[in-house]
Amino acid sequence: MTDLFAPLSFAHGPAMKNRFMLAPLTNSQSHADGKLSDDEFHWLTMRAKGGFGLTMTCAAHVQQIGAGFPGQLGIWSDDHLPGLTRLAAAIKADDSLAVVQLHHAGNRTPKELIGGQAPVCPSDDPETGARALTLPEVIQLREDFITAAVRADKAGFDGVEIHGAHGYILCQFLSPEINKRTDNYGGSLENRLRLIIEIIDGVRARCRPDFNLGLRLSPERFGLQLSEIIEASRRILAAGKIDYLDMSLWDVFKEPVEEAFKGRSLMSYFTELPRGNVRLGVAGKIMTAAQARSVLEAGADFALIGRAAILHHDYPKKVAADPDFAPIALPVTKDHLKAEGLGPAFVTYMSSWPGFVAKEEANA
Image 1: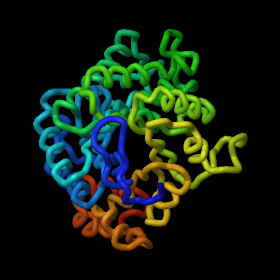
Image 2 (image 1 turned 60 degrees about the vertical axis):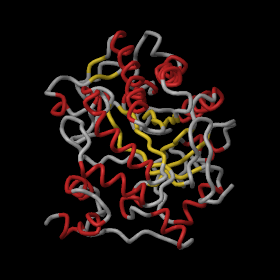
Image 3 (image 1 turned 90 degrees about the vertical axis):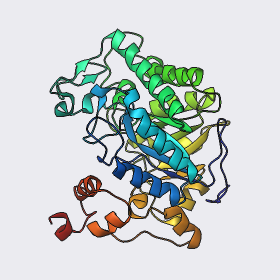
Image 4 (image 1 turned 30 degrees about the vertical axis):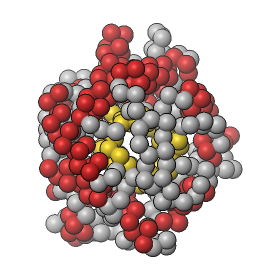
């Protein structure tokens, strides 16, 4: 099936009306206490109105000590429920699935965001100053991911995505370079994958039966080994407990970095895996309508749209109207981004991306 506008069913919960999923995008525009801001509400609901089959929040941290960015959305306290409930209802009102991404930054947490205390990591990390989690703290981390999913369920979201990618804490557990633990959460791949599996099992056990559950993985960088991420993906797909696997590839058209795996696309190592009833999506520099179609032709079930969704809140509608659609050329003006629903903090954040915001605008 290569039709971008064909519905996509999941094992749990409602179907996506099309194959466009809004990628979880850092935007630094919620309140310092993790509560939803009007700017973040506006940015996300504009994407739901713009035609995305699934609208995912930015990474929302499940522990206060796990913040990764200033102005990050929180889901670690019931104090966040009113804003989350308002957001879920508004996204669903526009016929888009509402999903929260669950996140903990681990050793990537800036100390200034957590009152100067040391960030946490699977093992002591002299480079970042992060300290190793004790075994009871690992169990608490697992519980807080699961509790955050229960909170999202209570707020009315259709589901959650577990963030196991990009060098954040669950990815740190997967990394043999970072994770030097000698207990059941370190050593073999089975042990390093254990925390993710236990979170998946806990969410399934404690959320409603039709709750949608996704997992984001990335296959490179941060000490990861491609062969291990392929095997981890194979095991998770075979278990059939998640609804979709979201592979964040940096660039969906690239070849692997590791020499032994070159000669074919990085994406192909995941599209060839048996997936049963689990769906597979890919993210990474999908900009044009033709590129979105090409990832379906290559075997993915849906495309995650990031930068193109920042540039055009109604990207799916534009693709529906023009099969040759390509986003506006970079750099763009601040006024363009404001018109597309980005608040001042998000515009400032995008100005730090090389070549994204016009220089005279970026320095204004």
